[in-house]
Image (cartoon, rainbow, N blue to C red; front, side, top):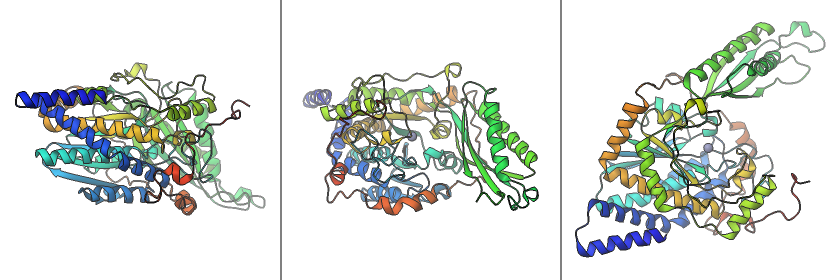
Length: 533
Ligand SMILES: [Zn+2]
């Protein structure tokens, strides 16, 4: 904060002595935006806690989307819904003309990650239910607060431009962004500022680490028969699923080291005494570049054909998701990183650090450094030859269609396994609330840079056209008629939603969600953890 105050004093002095230069004017606008974000800290907390309490999985973000779009409409944004045939997708816009700056973030949760926030050990709110075991409840609140702060300055200073907010629906299934791109949702967008929960403020440019992927389900159809009375008259679809699974495990030894592949059996038949007529297996095929992802999918397709041949069953398949390997824009990342340095990390309280260290200890981590206190350097490109694989995000598809960056903001605790109850612990606590405020300031300042300096948008497109896509072209994995898999997670939410509803956050009654749940912050184990026993 000190740096802001100093910056504002400098600006105030220059007002007294000379007309504002464009640079001073921008510094003033950024300081005003940061102040506006600070004044909305309560709104940010309410949105973060509310979305956390909904805990919805991909394609079923019904309450989440209803709530977030209502907030945006309240602040004058125009909302359209149902993009790409996805009921929980929407776009909110405000303003007019160029540039069009898009702000996106994911909104979905993780199966079986229901967890009480602020409690540094596994303690579900609803046993077995989904939750925000990645922290995706924080990103859209960050974007909304940033957008409102910038909108006020655009109105005051009559800045032209359009703000567009959009949700990463079903990111955990990588099942929306390639569809949004295919259907032209971003056709007028100049720059896409994506944001994702992390444990520091950082941004990178160039080829990112990690993988891209194709998510594909193979379904086999055989014939039922009495499993004991006449098994020779049956043809087992489950046999095909098991053969494909074991085949893949053998084949894995002969795949590149950078691949990741995993599967779940989504249908294993009905009951043991009926030869399974239908069975399905769902794979994620991950690799670090498009040709190698494609090659892996082709291996999967062949193996499925082989399993069908072996079992005399019929095989069909469908793509359920896809993510391109990511490439981020140099000009936008450099611009954003300058703002990261201005904003700096939040000031963590002793309670915040105690929660972080308590959880790191609970998980058996060799060291317990707590929360980040030193801001990250600008992330550099990860050459393909050094990339040993890892996770994916369908922001990759967007990043190959327009200048894009991902801002990571410090709303979670370092050293967690991910996709797990432990990643929800910080997500509705002061750690997340402060991390979102810091991230919203960076986001707002970067939007102001892009609105007021046309040379940045031009430079971003120069990098996109003449460096990034000079030799590498985007080849989507979905075709024009691949439907979005809107059926996913329906049954899980049908099973748990009524129990979860009892724990939705009511900001009219409780200052925070921790207060509503009656949780003392932080709650840290005083007896030895499971890992220590
Ligand atoms: Zn994520």
